[in-house]
Length: 214
Image (cartoon, rainbow, N blue to C red; front, side, top):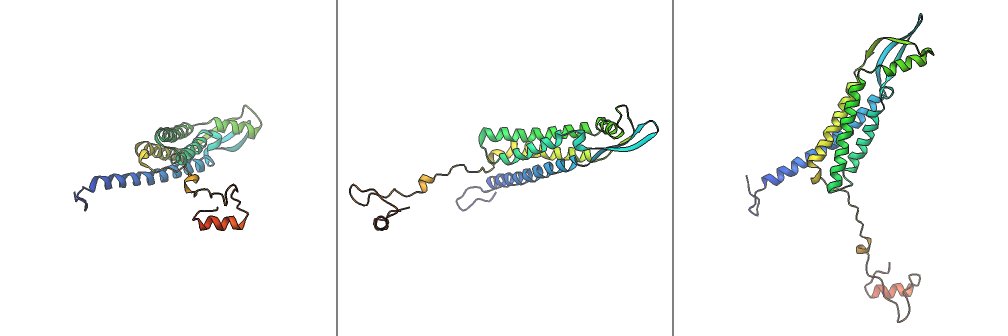
């Protein structure tokens, strides 16, 4: 371990800072990509089949949003939590990071449950044929539920990274100390006369005294 010019070892702090930066980048990328993947998968076809009523048969499909609206809703919650992580501090950041992780876990579980769902296909078949007794045959499922599950997993990873490293990440500053940036209020231009910013002579007198007339 090579000491810095002041004689202190520079290895561990630099290593910790690098790990924190990498975790921050990974969480942002993982969370944003995960939410995008879940939302894209929700609009794709998850199930296909044939609706049969008597001698008539028609193809029917079910999209991810028809199977379950939970993954896309949780993806939006997770995306909002990912942004909110940088707006809060201390305990609030832990809570928001937990929401992010739970959103990912929920989206993952809902996608896996919907991978073999046929209720949406049966509902679509009944609407297509106009008969509640319409049967669905030749059912098959696409790989989009698993893609959605991958998006949920990415959100979960972002939440776990935020829980582990989030306390070291920077936060948005909510303090705007306008009064500290303002100069002293100008004194009266003359004894018993208040300062009038609309009077040029008062402004020049304030400038001569080294005050800020604004």
